[in-house]
Amino acid sequence: MTPAPSAYHQRVAEEKRALIVQAATELFLELGYDRASLARVAAGAGVSKATLFKQFPTKAALFDAIVIDSWARNDVADVPPPGDLAAGLTVLGRRYATLLSQPEMTDLFRIVIAELPRFPELARAHFSQGKLPYFESVRLYLVTEHEAGAADIADPEMAATQFLGMISNYLLWPRLVLPDWTVTADRTTAVVDEAVRTMVARYGRSTS
Image (cartoon, rainbow, N blue to C red):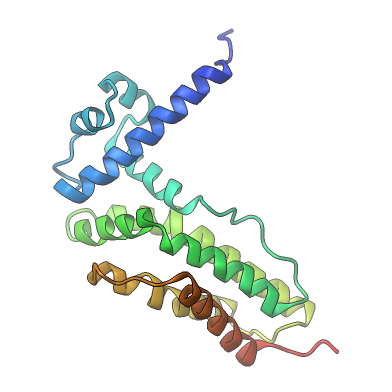
C-alpha cells in the first residue's frame, strides 16, 4: 500500500497548486484561454510540466480549479438559521460582497466573458461549479425562512436572484468595464444593508 504523503509534502503540493492556478489566471487574461498552453502555465508558475500535469491533466481541469478556488472563499454549506430574515440576509450578503470584491473574481468573470464566443463550456463550468452553489445556498435559506414563517416568499429562486443582483450590480459589474471603479468598505456595507432592507420590506413577515 502506498504510504500517505507527509504534512510537508502536502504543504508543498498545495503551494505549487496555488502557484499554478495564479499563473494560469494571469496567462488566460493576457493571452486568452486558447493560446495559454499548459507548458506556458508551468513556466509561469515555476514548476515542471510533470508537476502541472500531475495535478491538472487538462486545461479544462485547470480552469475548473480557478472557478472553484474563486468561489470557495465562503462556506456555502454554512447557511444561517431561520427566524431573523434581516440577520440571515446580512450574513449572506456580506459574504457575497466579500467574494465579489476579490480581484480574482473580477479576473474570472473577464476570462469567461472574453472566451464565451469560442469556449461556451467555460461559462457553463463557471455557473455550475461557482455561481450556482452559492446561489443555491441563498435560495435554500429563503426557503427555510418561508417555512419558519419569518418570510412570505412564493418564489425563492426569484427572490435569491433579486437579492444577489442588487449587490453584484453595484460591486461587480461596473468594475468589469470601468477599471477605475472603486467601492469603499463603508459603501460596500451600505450596499448590502440597503439590499437587506429592500428584501425585508418586500418579503418579511412579523413573527410576533
